[in-house]
Length: 394
Image 1 (cartoon, rainbow, N blue to C red):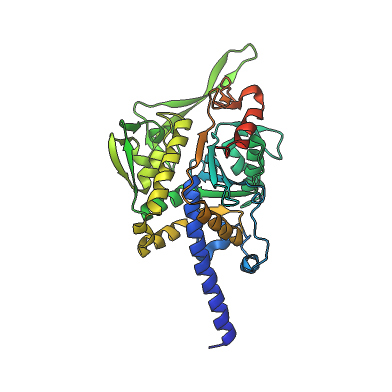
Image 2 (cartoon, helix red, strand yellow; image 1 turned 90 degrees about the vertical axis):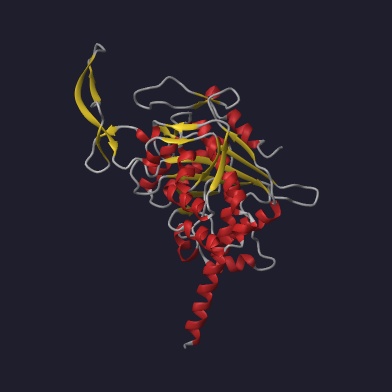
């Protein structure tokens, strides 16, 4: 066999295994602070949006080289975590259902302690879209950015707008889609949720939409319609069109998602439904449930039984598949894993921005153009900036 080919294969194999192992442990770190994961193995380039460079990673690993993450020397590393349906998935594939900021204070010395904070930002926060003279709900910013520049614009614009909201520098971002979350929970054998009372979501996954030939094909009974109106100059209006409504022929979460009180074992599909449900409660309660499920995933993934079971580890790696993306380079992922090792079992400071005095947001009157939105109290981000600034001071 040609020696140069053999060496090339060895380098390729080493790269693949190192990346898979590093990404696995980095995924565990992100599980500890949000619903986001990285793709492993031979498709690393897809995850890192083309930023993967094995030679840079080797150089950064050499003694004496500078391998600090952005913000590490200042005692704060900020990572934006985004969860969404997934590209080309019907029903708002690139609308961000989950928006969280994970902040890490690395342990500096023996007298210091590692700290972590995780703060959720609601999808209905009304913001100025970067690069556009318009305002939209923050969950639309990623999709609009992708229209501008595929596989880069969405992440860049979300980092920009979340930086404006929080007052933080957000150098890193990670996205994960629903399939990646589902596969990961299945890979670890599911999670157990204990409920003090029954949980039911009868509306969100059984919602009628305008009929179409592919997805919403089952007519409502009795027939329901969505009307289009024309408003006269004096303010009165009349119906100009009526569109029949239909149900999804393959309803998510079985249409009516319910869990009894007590302990419930959730596979990936049920865990996703539990973490997504919000019509029967609200977006803020959903964010808290997401944090609850994340803790359960972390606890299950870090058990000896999981880490020593090759089939489970392999399945966890495979779950990353084509389901995640990050702007971090391979050496940065490795460094993040090193910081995780030093952090140990740091209990994160978790908060949710919501429409209350303490939650720092309020809901203005609903408008026909924007619908239901949220704005910062005082109509500026000053108090939100203060919250994020002090989120690691606990």
